[in-house]
Image 1 (spheres, one colour):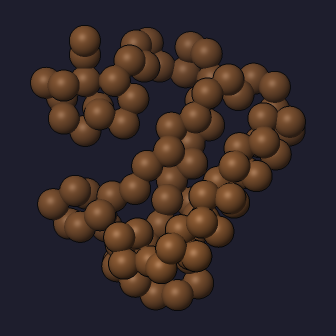
Image 2 (cartoon, helix red, strand yellow):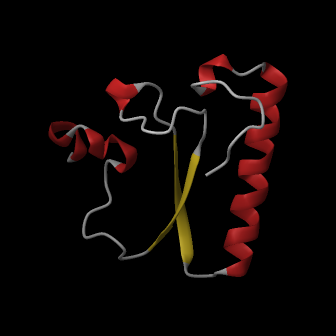
Length: 89
């Protein structure tokens, strides 16, 4: 998880400079993780904004989830898996 220092509920309340810094960090972490572990071949990136969207931590944050080939039988649909009828193509 990437968590900004300033407390806001969702990423939509962050200032543009904060969003820029977060996305810069996401890129750096992606590169570091890929270098550290060659079995990482993909990433899911996401955020939950609001209780209805599944947010359980009342502070803005972004998930960076490393993925490996075969870690899930059928990864198609990615983060859309939260809507089961849209998960599969």
